[in-house]
Image (cartoon, rainbow, N blue to C red; front, side, top):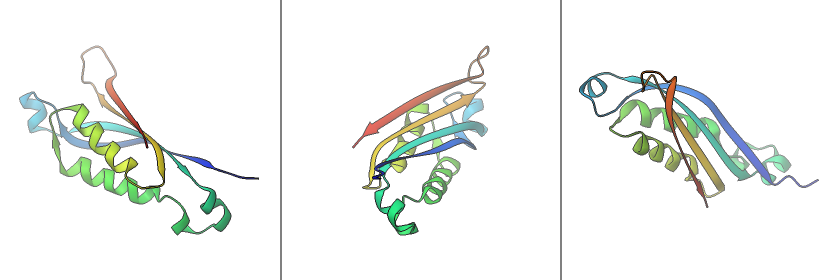
Length: 120
């Protein structure tokens, strides 16, 4: 059996960052919830069972955490785009999607989210 396409899903990564344009948002960190989907060919990994033949989701997640926690953002679009760049940078990645939720961004809504994706 040939296994080709793998899907890695990083679900509900809860972090805090500076995000927004109002003074209160600039001065105080806010919660964000990040979901990432990555497609890549996992044939080598399924045949070898060796880490060097797989996409390391732990490394990707650590880079996302570092970016989000150490950077200030005005726009949800920029934050989402920068995370997407990390998720899609490996040469094996064929598709990546990132959704970032900003809880309590609107008065009567649970959250506002932005989703970006790319095909390679």
